[in-house]
Amino acid sequence: MSIPRSSSGKRLRSVVPGWGLFKGMWLTFRTFLRKPVTVMYPVEKEIPPERARGVIALDVEACTVCMLCARECPDWCIYIEGHKVQQPPAEPGGRARTRSVLDRFDIDFALCMFCGICVEVCPFDALFWSPEYEYSAESLADLLHGKERLTQWLATVPEPPALEGSEPEGGEP
Ligand code: SF4
Ligand code: SF4
Image (tube, rainbow, N blue to C red):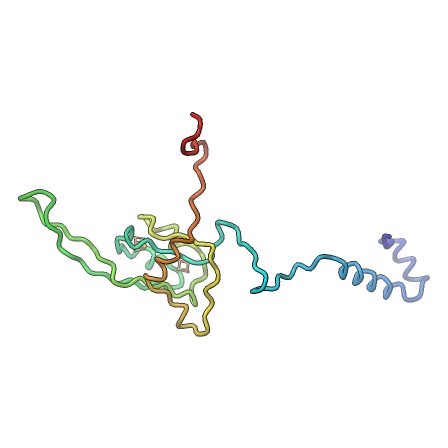
């Protein structure tokens, strides 16, 4: 059954008493029969899209302590500290080299606005998005994730999508 609209609807409204009320009740009834869109979290869980921005993961081995992500973060919620260590020369008689060692890498997810700039600007592919979203905390201070926690998120980072035109491994040439 469909409710007459436009000019005929206007006509009906003027001749049938309570037409507006009936129309409202009909809409309520139709909505009542529809499948609800609400998800009863945490009993029921939705699977986010694979590339969803849930939390940021850090690959400590790839990070060179260049500070670029911390400088570009619009919320100033990345805190990095490091120090330099002397490395022996690659060849005898060569110059000694220095290497940066990461001491602290924290992201404050209470401030983060999930813009993704840090992930985009990292020149050494040390930051990744994970779709993991279940890290709520009772206090704001607990949303400050240190490098150990950020490293743990690495296990939840999905494989990058295959490049356009690339062959799958072991596939036919
Ligand atoms: S996602 Fe944006 S706001 Fe969050 S840490 Fe990265 S740059 Fe900062
Ligand atoms: S931009 Fe990348 S390499 Fe540089 S400090 Fe940030 S995570 Fe480390």
